Image (tube, rainbow, N blue to C red; front, side):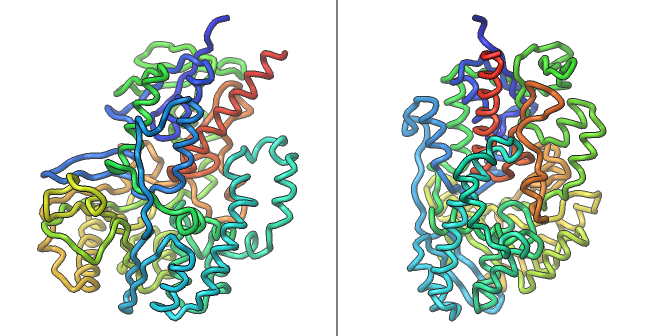
Length: 497
């Protein structure tokens, strides 16, 4: 019997994980990547002796990576090492209060009681609820297709649906947090988890209160060598499994005939395949690769997630009060999200996230110096004047950090680079520069997100942050697994027929 062929479009995390799974399942796999490097948003660069992870900076749920290597029958330690980080994040508030968010529930509860006056029992209750919600609902919704009847007929799903409470569905995350905590700072700290998938805490459903479980209960981790080591490990594993990655080779079109996928067009040549798995943004897949205006329009009905303005600063000194992850909060969170999502502008007192991997290992910055990755939430690109907005934002960020850290931040910047929504779209193919595909700002967002398959074209599947179950590294791994399992199920059906 002839070996089935698969083509994967794009080598982001989901594309690489999907390609590996297909190769293990017996497919001959070709990955076509338009960039000269793999990883999509999970890339890397060096400048003036400083090493920077260009994209995602938080590593949670390493079990997704572990599970992929186990599926491939390869010892993960030969490819990838990581360690647990006991401190998930340092939080700085404009009123001078500071919180160290430990990934130990008791210690975190004590910290919030000591620093904010938040009753420790509120924190412990919240984390317990977050864990229950994730285990009962989240794990089912995130690990299975929501668009197949078979998912809904499973016993665990029926049981899970009984545990959903009205505030999870009808209320917002902010409303849920307000009813859970007494202090404004604790509410703001837990509201922040909406930004994990580029959403607005004042709109996204209370169901998102399951997200803190991932970071504060399960823990945060650091991959040795920085986040780029995830991409490097996947490329190495793909190579070991016989996957062929073609760099600087964009796919021009997906070929399909009479409702069946036939392959792709690359360099004006047909590459035939039994299965095509698109890791490209679903908007561009329909608009450019399928030339399907009707489906393109449908995808646009869902609001895009926020984007980001990223500064990469090589700092000429060390900051002992900072750790791997640090957040400097806006004084008015509601106004910040109103500005981002409604007015599509940057807020003049932004929340600033600072990631410093040189805190974790040497060699990522020159001795006595630090590599700062600063992410500020930004609206998706609708043609704003990003050049001017970036210049203004840079000064606002410098003023804010200088004020809170009581030091001259501008004088400490030795070298810098930036990424704005326009560059994000150019480099990663993410429509409008959105970081997580679509937002979760509506009660039905999870169900409206594009499935990992299409009923219109047999043999075409999707895996990326722009389709189910959503954006972020853990969900991209899950997206690849769901798509691969659907391919396997469909393959078995064809064999039995």
